Image (cartoon, rainbow, N blue to C red; front, side, top):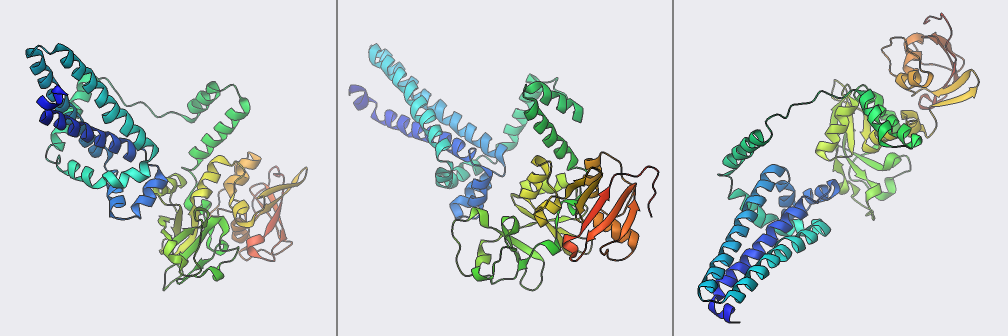
Amino acid sequence: MAVISDFGAALAAMVALALASAFFSCSEAALFSLQTDDRRKLRSGDAAQRAAEDLLRRPERLLSAILFWNLLVNVAFFALASVIGIQLEREGRRAESATLAVVSLFSLIAVGEMLPKTLGVQLPRALAPLVSFPLAFAVRALDGLMPLLSAVNRLLQRLLAPSFRREHYLEIHDLERAISLSTADQQLAAMERSALHNIVLLSELTAEELMRPRTQYRSYRPPLSLQELTCEAVDGGYVLVAEEDSDEVAGAIPLGRMTALPRQHLEQFARPVACVPWCAAGSAVLEQLQQQQQEVAAVVNEMGETIGIITLEDMLGAIFDGDSSRSARALATASIRQLAADRWSVTGFTNLRRLSRHFSLPLAPSRSLTVRGVLQEILQRMPVAGDEVVWGGFRFRVLDADRQESIRVEVTLPIEGATSS
């Protein structure tokens, strides 16, 4: 009690500094524990929530500011503790001085570091908006020092790690070898190799090959009511909302993430969609969806018209599902199905790349991307039941062409020496 009465102002300042340290520690843990879905919800929230998400758009600046202020607060805290301790030593009160040093250390560790960081990790979405405005002010206060801090950081990196060099890109077989050595479970290793191969293949596939064609989805113009929705409209878990004066897709309602729906004006729950060209690589589409934190991309042709959509689920299916195909997604049926030892049934949407992978054979050059496109290219008309063509060593016979979206073709084994006709 004597220490409190003698050094009340200094101890009160130490308590304030400990609380400030707790604030910065909690802020760091809360903001950097936010997941992608958390940040998406904050972006569409109130002013405090949007401020928290804005801080994370420049993570290096935010982290540097938090560490700077936290270090400054901790140094000031221990400086006051040292001043009080030295004064107690001069007065011969060594026991009180030692007690103050121990209590100060453990108090800062518990109150200023451990407890706030634990709370920040456990409750990031609740705490992030609460700390956003004070933290934004603290970050802006250091804008003048940021260039100096960045320069010091780069200098220290070059002094402490001057020999770091950029490594060469890993080849696909290097990654497959690493996967094989990482686990003794051959089935798991095979699945990982398949996913890795599909990830690499995304750089070769185009958005036009991955998309759901415009004939396979339906969009609605606002205002949109619950009564208008059909099973066809929610294929893939999204309801597509068009622009008010056109059929171009402007937004998507993720029904799978909603627990309740109003009966009227569903368009207010629509989220913006990304826009990608038909020739964009699948890897670029996935990267754009991740960067923009969106789930649906509209594929446009060179005229700016929407010709299809790609959902995040489609991209993940192309990576992790070896049998994933546009036919399986659009028609709920296998794109390649064996009928006999030398005959298969395929859908018109079956991609030529998938046909090549299935039979492990190279295909003849073609301007088309699908089996239906090859038939139209050779026949120069719409296919009808009974049409037979030979292309790239394969014999195609149209089994059913009553509806173009459900056209099925019989494929026989490659014919030796055959040419396209």
